Amino acid sequence: MKTLLTTIAVLFASCLAQAQNPLSVADITIPQNGQSELTIRYEFPAEGLYTGYSLSITLPEGISLVQNDKGKYVYTLGECHEDTHQMTANYDERDGKYKFGCLSLESDPLTGMSGVLLTLPVTTDGSNAVGEVLQATLQDANFGKLDGQTDFFTDVVTFTITIGEPDDGRLKFDENATKLPSYTAGEKADVTMKRTIKGGEWSTLVLPFNLTKANATAAFGIDVQFAKFAGFEVDYGEDEENVTPLGIIINLTSYTIPTRGNMAGGTPVLIKTSKDIEEIKLDGVTLTDGVKDVEVSDEYKTPGMLTGTLVKSTIPADGLFISGNEFWYSTGKTAVKAFRCWFELGAVLDKETDFGARVMLNFVKDESTGISEMENGKSDNGKYYDLQGRRVAKPGKGLFVKDGKKVIIK
Image 1 (tube, rainbow, N blue to C red):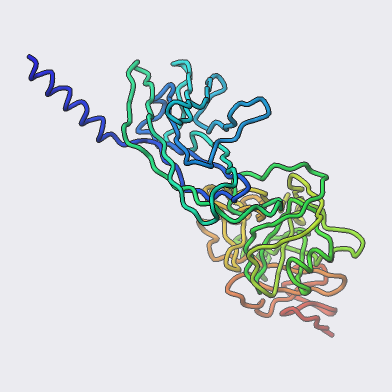
Image 2 (cartoon, helix red, strand yellow; image 1 turned 180 degrees about the vertical axis):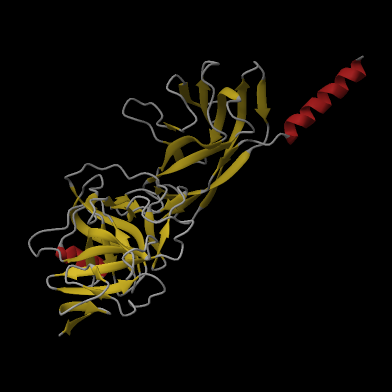
């Protein structure tokens, strides 16, 4: 009997050791005198399997979790939690571990099969050298199940913390971030923004701060061009009875930032630079929040909109976006980085039958109009437009635009 019990215990321990830990932690970099975020992700084997959990984190010397002004550890619960879940967080000086516990009712299990479990801000005390790579661990993970049992995971999750260059105190915006840094709209700040732009191509842009003319030149170059959304129309070609559209014409107006004014933060625009952009730094900009959608209609009053996002997001289905100097339709699962825009023109084209249809940008400024296509960088092939940018199938006498140039037909 004793031998049998020992065998069972060994088998049970073996099963525990082989169980795959559903938690993972990405390596992070912390500025020598600043802080960063530690993200714990989960991947559960089934939906609604667990009702609660506990775990421990061990951090190297000089690194600690952030506390609020009341001495409580700061954390953000991931999307798998319900409002009824109760969280505890404390530091055990005896074993040097930060311990977390989440309790819930059986009627409110953790939701989803994968995502973010916890986000924890971590900070340094400045004692570690720049470039130093430190090891940290997550362990003691166990999850309560709906059937009253508990899953224990003996695997230790190891991740690294690299000490980066000291924080320069600038407010940092990153096109890969899923949330904005903490700031107050209306305040002024020195900012650093990571936003990659390919030179020589039209891209989209929306900013979380006002942009003066001087700032635009400093950030994007003296020859930077901006354009605003002015409307759209469906091109049916020369056959007036043709019901299959050849494409969409998106009307834009060239935009120049006033010398004594600014382009308001949150304004979706198109931008073209002559050089590649990876990062910009600006001083004393006025911060804003939110995106101000630009809404217009086509000639039949069909609504259209240019909108955007200040965080990494997903473009809704049928959203029309620019990538690689071409237009594309979103499937509804198309990821988009921060500080970019897309058009929402409704289901103008049927993607099953109108896959050959083109989208053209029609620039209108004063009395002159330039026509250009986003497809393969080709110019418009001999079509005529009036001075309002509308396609003319059979032009009569008058002034028209052809291949981006004004022509007179007598």
